[in-house]
Amino acid sequence: MNFIAPGREALPDPEFAPEPLRAWLSSLPPHDAAAAAAALIERMTALNRADLQPRARLRALEMLRDHIEGLVPQLERKLARAAPPLDSARRQTAYLIEKLFKELAAGYSRTILSVPRSWLSLGYRAQLHVPLVRAVDYHARRLSLAQQLYARSPSAVWAELHRLFLLAREWHIEGARIESPPRSALDVYRTALLLAFAQPSKLTRADFARAQEYLVQHAELAEVLPAKPVANPAGVFAIDPRRDKPGVAYAKRSDAGYDNGALLLATGKLVERLEFQVRRLKDGIAPASLGLPEDASSLAYQELLQLLGVHWRGDRAARSARVRFHPRVDAWIGLREIWRALRAELPQQGAAEASARATEWIVLNESSRGFALRHMSGAAPPVEVGELVAIKPRDRGAIFVCLVRWIQSNNPEHLEVGLQQLAPIAIPAVYRPSETDRAAPEPILYFPQLPAKRKSAAVAAPPERLHANAPFSLRHRHGRLSLRAARLIEKTPSVELIEVTGA
Image: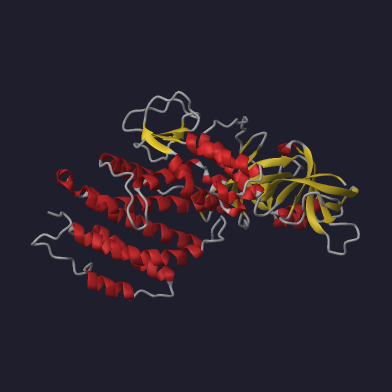
């Protein structure tokens, strides 16, 4: 007996029979990915509403899935370099991808959940293995898309992931891998949890991709376990399947319970491996011998590993007291725009021009370390984690130079950023590799003290301009300085913070 086999009286729906469906797929426009995606979404929605025999549904799902998997990379390329806030065209592209994943997940879930439980005792669970893993995978891909775009997680997606994974555990197939692609429900679910606990709103797009690649090799070191009392909360996360959330670190919320089928994610072994790799990289060991890509020898990659270690330990972060009020501030984004704004503060410069370039934001909260802002008006340029932002409160004359530490953007009109204040004094300057160099001087920001980075003197420069131990000349409103780049403090896609000393 085979519950997927058609019954004697079962007739296939002509709309979803193999030959008509194959002909319809062949008719989709090959050079218009958006139009093809919209048509596929419409057909998938109809399939998920149709009353079909399980075998016919799965066959149609697999045919549609094969076509969608060939189409999605074309859509994803349109988002490759997108930074929030996304314009309407890119938002529409993201919507199409998310909707394709959602309908595929819904189709596979319906196949699984519509089977009478009495049939499962007869040995039919293995036949539901592939659709179950597919459903988990597409829900996880919906999450990943939202995380990459700094958007809110789709509604109910975590609740569905918890439900499907618990079903896989109940059937004792959570660790069994399907063939194409080779993965299990446990592989997908565990990676989704780890990416959520990595706090993707604080990662650049490039770092998020690196975290995904790292987990392909090392995620199996984390363990998903039945809930039990926790003696040491470090590296332990509580998962409550009743909630539409990934879970919470025990170190941050010790009252997390153990009932109602709750699970634990234990990351201790993963964090130990990660910290070992960081130590060996600093000792000069080749990344390949540690199971890491070649760029793991860079400072930026090692800082990412250290940040992931902090997040996967689940340590409670020290929080400064926050003042919640909502003044308006002007903001400038990017090194060059900030340089212009700071120059405009000088008497001989035009403050009106700099003010015209500013965008208006509202302060959601303020602490001793920085600010949380929401964009209000003005054409906000794309912003990334690690970008320089300067803000000027309207009731104070000072300009604060900050780094973007997190982003949230749920639609084209919504953009929030978390800023870490770098220094109370930032001086606009220009620099040359040497006084005799004939190259045009470039804008640079000079910080006499950088409290956020051990109070050392530092500069903010475009990437790949200054090198360790390289001397350079800096000219600002107080005169000239001969400096030497001592060490790279932090590197982001748009700027480098470099500690400097006298030449």
